[in-house]
Length: 90
Image (cartoon, rainbow, N blue to C red; front, side):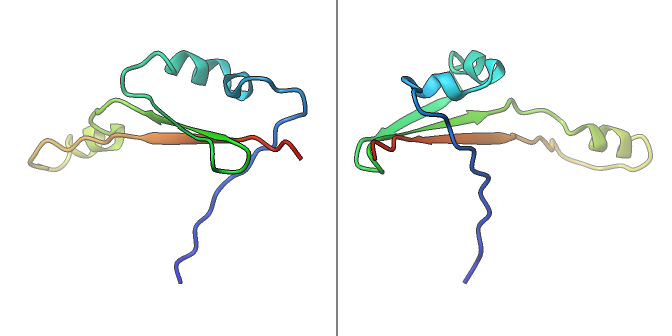
């Protein structure tokens, strides 16, 4: 069976909005059209998933490699990160 690794950060009691646990940078990304937000009231006592998708760009390492090698094609990456907030009313 494949293993999956997740990093968990626990929030403090008294957090009233999911957005309050996000960094300022993540809060700024909420306004981007590439950011996806999904709510699931049945997960725990309620949950919200934020997916932050970066812009497509040629990787820095590829630009450097192309100074030495002929690498054909338009190679671009799209980095992504996610945050899942879960309510615990227990």
